[in-house]
Length: 372
Ligand SMILES: *[C@@H]1O[C@H](CO)[C@@H](O)[C@H](O)[C@H]1NC(C)=O
Ligand SMILES: *[C@@H]1O[C@H](CO)[C@@H](O)[C@H](O)[C@H]1NC(C)=O
Ligand SMILES: *[C@@H]1O[C@H](CO)[C@@H](O)[C@H](O)[C@H]1NC(C)=O
Ligand SMILES: *[C@@H]1O[C@H](CO)[C@@H](O)[C@H](O)[C@H]1NC(C)=O
Ligand SMILES: *[C@@H]1O[C@H](CO)[C@@H](O)[C@H](O)[C@H]1NC(C)=O
Image 1 (spheres, rainbow, N blue to C red):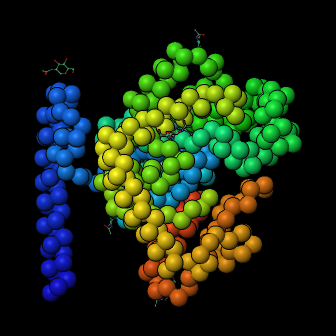
Image 2 (spheres, rainbow, N blue to C red):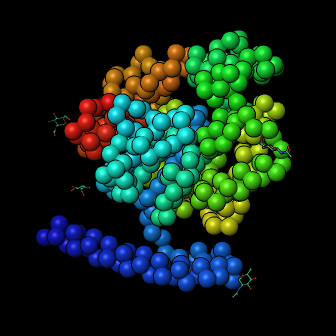
């Protein structure tokens, strides 16, 4: 009986929720007539929260975006959503090619019904345009982004391969960076600018930068900042009406030279903090960041046998071992084996490397295709 009541109350909750969401649609249509007559604060207080489930995440390289990917994968499972996965034997959505829908598995049949798209792609707003979808991304300070890129793509990018270390490379980049190797060298200059679909070798001038940033402002509903990762997750949760547990994770994974990336970063760093001021305020942010950190600590204590990440040679469950680039030693976790089966499965997902998690979804959604 208690089970019945539980389901009934859940049902009622959903009905109420649906009703509120419907009203919101009417209200927002109404407010759109002249948004500027309402202050941001008033709109926020009038707006009930509807969990957003249609999401496009632009995953930029070496910017903690694998963690966001894991968060989105778990959200996908929790809400039984459909995810746009790379077609055939691809592991990315065509990257570094500019995104085309044909890079998505079964796009012709499932097409408009995908809820989540988050694997690596080079942004192309003409191909991913969708009215009800929430677009977001997370750039990082280009100095640390390039350093991290250098280590990870040391053997992949000719400009990195032929220099001794990142300092030598940045001391005279033109000795190592040749536009002829354009495709292999995208990690070596303005890589985030490239991921956002722009020309990473473009000239840095005011009118061009402004035009690109304006276009990005139009295409993205939210741009987070990796260097403020906890604050970013709180703002994401707040904007998408998610729960705190939806954004808990376990951490997996040259100003002049990358001047386009630097401008991108400064711009979105400013709009990030402005958005926080306008929506939740700094006090609320601090309160929730503290809650998030406490919750994360609590979960780590129950779920992990070593409280810290371990090196690849010490990962006990080989299914949890991340893809290893030659140069970068990526850390992983060992799980506490005393847990009950359900918790173990749930926690496994929290530490599962992205390629494993992606193949898991691929087998689930496309059972007739050859697995990855
Ligand atoms: C709507 O807002 C704009 C810009 O603030 C203003 O110029 C215009 O008069 C407003 N329209 C109405 C109907 O209030
Ligand atoms: C999840 O969705 C699929 C189809 O999209 C459906 O067949 C299945 O029953 C759903 N599972 C749950 C637990 O809602
Ligand atoms: C600015 O840079 C863009 C992109 O490289 C270029 O197309 C444009 O001609 C430049 N404009 C000026 C005034 O230099
Ligand atoms: C980003 O914004 C914060 C808050 O305004 C500021 O303290 C910080 O210096 C900014 N970072 C950069 C690199 O400008
Ligand atoms: C736990 O899961 C494993 C495999 O995932 C299964 O073989 C085993 O029977 C499960 N144990 C219980 C008690 O459900």
